[in-house]
Amino acid sequence: MHQRANPALMKQRRCLAEHPFGVIKQRMGYPRFLLRGLKKAKAELALDVLTFNLQRVIAIIGATRLIAKLRAA
Image 1 (cartoon, rainbow, N blue to C red):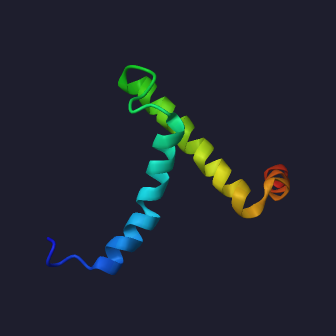
Image 2: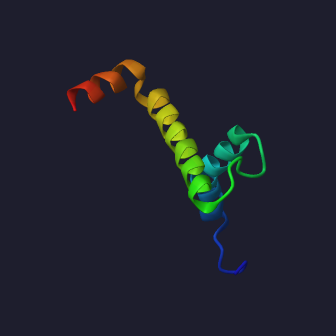
């Protein structure tokens, strides 16, 4: 695998794909989920992903544009 791996593509993958997971884990503050059970852990992860996505949208387009687009929809 190491012979086939393109270092430039691997660096790009680390920047694009692994960053959100690292940020979400860091914001959770714990190495594990706070809730127990698959259903509850899925709900906890869904809320964490939702907050990450909302923060990214606010950082990119701004809060006022986001609210205007939500009201228009």
